[in-house]
Image (cartoon, rainbow, N blue to C red; front, side, top):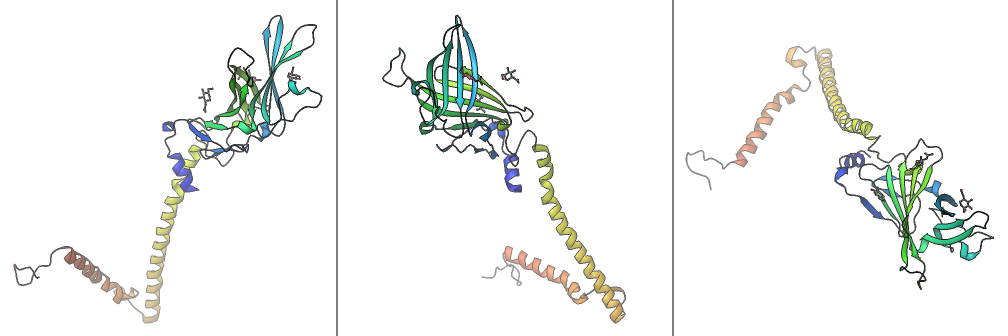
Length: 290
Ligand SMILES: *[C@@H]1O[C@H](CO)[C@@H](O)[C@H](O)[C@H]1NC(C)=O
Ligand SMILES: *[C@@H]1O[C@H](CO)[C@@H](O)[C@H](O)[C@H]1NC(C)=O
Ligand SMILES: *[C@@H]1O[C@H](CO)[C@@H](O)[C@H](O)[C@H]1NC(C)=O
């Protein structure tokens, strides 16, 4: 844990260009990216609908987007097949035309993302894990053979998520559709990294404050215990010598013979190391022993 978070906090986030990960085709709705974990199940497990109305006098067009990030949309009973997306669709855009005193008419049905072509891409902002883009892919529209003037365009769905834990009911808005990619913007809690993910915005300060502590205090404790053991050794040893032999002065030192030897032993070791590091000098002056 310590290693992981310190390694992460030392990553120069700003140098990381957009970190992109191609997720498995089977998008599991709980992706992990750059050590942050997300849960998109509140945008799945059933159909979510976002509408947008455009004034196109003398009519109105309602862009109705239905999506389920975690699974396929269910086909609706009582709606004609050509008025809804085929099975296997995860994101479906339906455009409905409304004219006063007339029946509303479905003018286009566009599968923006299908499970078989999903190819999900998730990118997280290099500055903050609280800003994400998720892109799903779909088939071309209109399906060939082309009936329209332009060539069929590959469709995709781009969802931009902004973490906003305060918002009670998330704000989801269609911000654009250029005939190929629909852009949906989301503000809410699903854009927030889950607890346990490193969070440069909020978690950095406490993490940085805590990190060096375990290492420093661990070493500190080690030396403290070592010192205490040493003091206890001399204290108890001296008391033992005093009470058992009535020792005084230098004689109080436990294992005195050993401790008196220590300086000589050190001297021996050092002189041995020095002599083996240098060429040996002959005792008979001037000649190198061969
Ligand atoms: C969105 O628009 C569709 C098509 O007009 C309509 O049936 C549906 O009730 C609308 N849903 C919402 C949430 O406004
Ligand atoms: C998401 O896409 C928009 C353009 O649609 C771009 O401006 C933004 O930088 C992207 N953000 C991330 C985190 O990839
Ligand atoms: C929802 O988001 C859109 C665009 O991001 C903004 O214009 C609108 O005011 C927001 N609505 C609410 C209720 O926060």
